[in-house]
Amino acid sequence: MTDRGAGRVGRGGRPTWAGRNYTLLTAAAVITGLGNFGALIAAAFAVLASGGDGTDVGLVAAARTVPLVVFLLVGGAVADRLPRHRVMVAANALNCLSQGVFAALVISGSAELWQMVLLSALGGVGHAFFAPAAEGMVLSSVRGEQAGRAFAVFRMGVNGASIGGAALGGALIAAVGPGWVLALDAAAFAVAGALRAFLDLTDMPAREPGGGLLGDLRDGWREVVGRPWLWAIVLQFSVVNAVVAAAEAVYGPQVAEEHLGGARPWGVALASFGAGTVLGGLLMTRWRPRRVLLAGTLCVFPLALPSAALAVPVPVGWLIAAMFVTGVTLEVFGVTWMTALHQEVPEDKFSRVSAYDWLGSIALVPVATAAAGPVEGLVGRPAALWGCSILVALLTAAVLCVPDVRNLTRRETVVASAPPGEPADRPEGQPTVKAPSGGSGEGAASAS
Image (tube, rainbow, N blue to C red):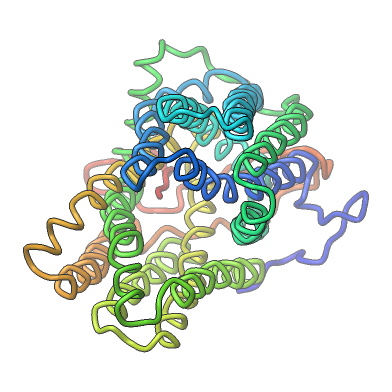
């Protein structure tokens, strides 16, 4: 099924689904993406340039992840209680400040490990509040009829920025040093925050008074557990993301070094995954599967391919192909997932549900990467990699056993025209999935 109205153009030459808020959000996300992915590389090289070792690099990376996990749920509740764009701007300001200080210390040659750990942790706090607010804002910024197309284009921009940012960051580190790349990231946060400050929330639905932070978190939890398709996929990806991260961050470089020719072919393989996500986004600008989660979940099975390819190991050309296919299919899942969330979750709970989704997606990643080495020592690397592939396949098959995952369908409600710069009201209608026998509410939800 293809998108109706794909070629309609609104004011200013933009498609009718690309309203003002959506355009600002997409531009800001691309700008921060270009800065962030280069800065991740720059932070590691900054630690090494200051005399640190691999353990110190890992400590600085962990310092960003831990507060992200700790504060995500609070960030989601805050973003559903306050205007989301204000939360995003405040988070951007914190990230701009922390990265700016980080850059100044590195450029001056006075950066110490404890300072880099602290500044990295501040960045994690900012991201914990930013991520749920940003996803909630993106979900709120598009019309239901064209949501899939809008999410596909948004994700294409973010994925393209990640590829370009990593390449640009690596080149700039070699040319001018990591400190200046961190400074550019701080500037990107400043520009993106300024763009997000111009978001217009005048037509957003009014929010009901909350029952306190804990009450808001309980409401978000009920949104998740009351929808089997939502919590099932969140649980699935909590493990899938963890084992994929272990395979790619720990085992992949070792296999590449011993069997594939080193870092260069491994980098090409990772880049092919990024290229695949861009192609997947292009595909989803045209394809509108009727059973959105069935189509998306079937596209998770190829995530088992890279681990299996590393376990054999196959020649590098086959690994590149596997990574490319995985990128395409995972992007199909990502767009269908956002479409389901947009369609089924009440607008005033977008950010809280997103926070639980984010938490499920990242909570086990540090555990899996830390356990990868001991597991390899116990069973050997090939067996560990085959285990990663088998877990991905089994968990994905298990999710397909959930009736709501198979049956949730796209609404075909035609939404009345609205000013292209403003979010339209979400369509009303009957639930799109059958309520389970235990009763799940009135048809809403989503995941990872």
